[in-house]
Amino acid sequence: MEYYYIMNEDILGLEYDLDKMKKNIRDLMTDSHMTQEQLERKTGISQSRISKVLNSKKNSDAFTIQQLVSIAQVFGVSTDQILGLNIPTKEKKESEITLFDILIKLFEVDKLTAFEIKEYILPDDPKEQDNTKKQTKHQPYILFKNNQINKILSEWKEIKSLGSNSEMTKQTITNLQNLWKENIISRAKGCPKKWNFRSKKDEQKEIMNRILNDYENCPYPDDFFPMLFPDEWELLEEYYNSGKYISDFPEHESFITWLLPNILK
Image (cartoon, rainbow, N blue to C red):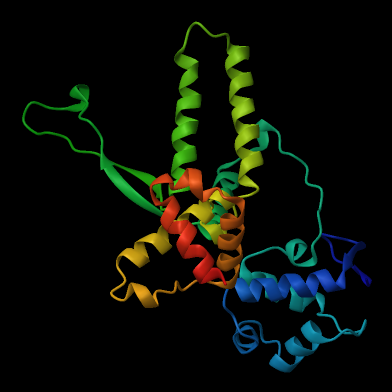
């Protein structure tokens, strides 16, 4: 493993792993479906140079600081992320938080998952109405296009509403809310974007559901064969071997027990 030192005002003298840097750039290109030619057009770095750095095992082949900055800007990430650095950040005090901090987080969410900004009509306020004309107000809101996120938001709404329960102390409510957050965060680590933020088991159930629906709608069931990605085949085989489909799909247990061995072989 080769390490290099990078010198700039943000990460002065910090050590980074050259192989990790190359892998991170390749992963960003794969996730964005970007070719080396497209990266050349966006950064001005020649395709031959990109290819040489990403594929070479020589210690001397690395991008310059300016080239790394250009690549980071293309993918909307920091140079720290490309270099695989964990730079300690100083947490802001309450009085130091500005609208900038909120907008930055919101724009980061926009890169991670799709959402819509819609409007709903606010109920009329009798105090603001005159006797001759009805007032109509529209209020924007954010709607996430993801069931998993919306489920968590619904849970969060219920947890936050605990404050209206006068039988519980403020400390008890805070403890319950913190426990819920810790549990959600712990579970969330196993819910990647590639699975639409679902857990492994939920993704396996989703694959199984698709197979059942496709089989039901297949005009030639004797020739049925599902179209799955390689990692989905691995998840399906693991799901079958675990036997979890028996409790997840009790009404289809016999059929699945017959079908999966035939398509997995």
